[in-house]
Length: 436
Image (cartoon, rainbow, N blue to C red; front, top):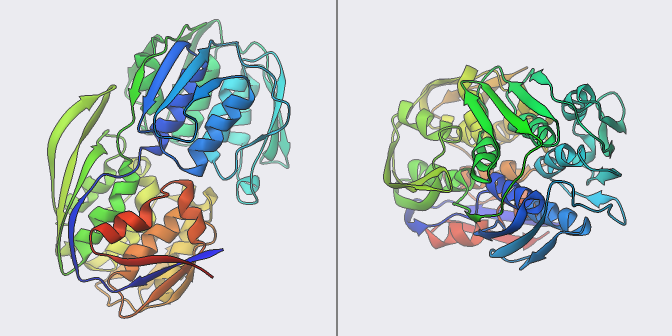
């Protein structure tokens, strides 16, 4: 086990390029595997989550040149070319990888069991099992929430129209991927628009995809063609550097090659509303996605309300926004975010406990929290509860605390951002990882 040690860092400056986007990395290797021909992936995230997805596909007979490096060539086997794995597929801590692969495995002619670590084994998979069941695919898991280990008995899915109860890119993506194997049109309707990387990438690979508002459909049986995928920098990873620059006394940081997909930039929208000094620069299009740079400077913040349809576009950044809210003038309210209770940790409860330990005034709500600011934060000994986003969010908080803050569970940061400490140090942040 390792620990992050963070000391006050009042002045930050520099330019960084975050690690490859996790969501796009997962999808690039999955679609490349079931496409016909080769897919060249550049900038693939070397985090444990995405590597576990690639290893699972390799275990099913997909040849991946450069596995374990940012530059990979995936030799596609076609929609039904996957082979039964010799063992269970170990997805580690990756809920995204497990749920998306459930969709792909629905269309295979064999049964597969997927397992995960202790954290993943507590997460609900019924939200995928239910629509797959409606498509005629049997899924078996543990308990009423269908937690891992989960077994997908592949076959011939039938097309459905699925009205999702939550705005979840993982649910939507699993159903669409299963829909590739269904004879007809599979449609997903969401209560609000979630991340749309799957539908963008499916279209780029040649699938017949239709989108209108919160509805998306795919026609099967599809034929995908391999292609080049350049993975941009992860928006969620870049967010920590933007927040650090906004909070520290004297700071200007530029985050380059950042994904600016509208379904992922809710943090920037909220920061604009809070009065943060941030600007977008050099926007271009890349593999159907908008990419650019973000310049962030020291800012005075005002409180805001974060709720409703904007929640899906910043769901991963809410613990970080809670940290930012401690320095805003007024009371910031976060609502409609009950989804955070079934992530790697109960992120609402853990965030509230960590904020309180650092001296912040926070009220935990069933679906969010209220943070009263501004508050001078004090150093504390925190437990990330094995959650990478909690660890990184409170590393940012530690930069403005009154002494050294320690955060246990630093090793979980490597699931999504293995170069986090090095990147933070490159802009002048006093952060180190040590064995506890």
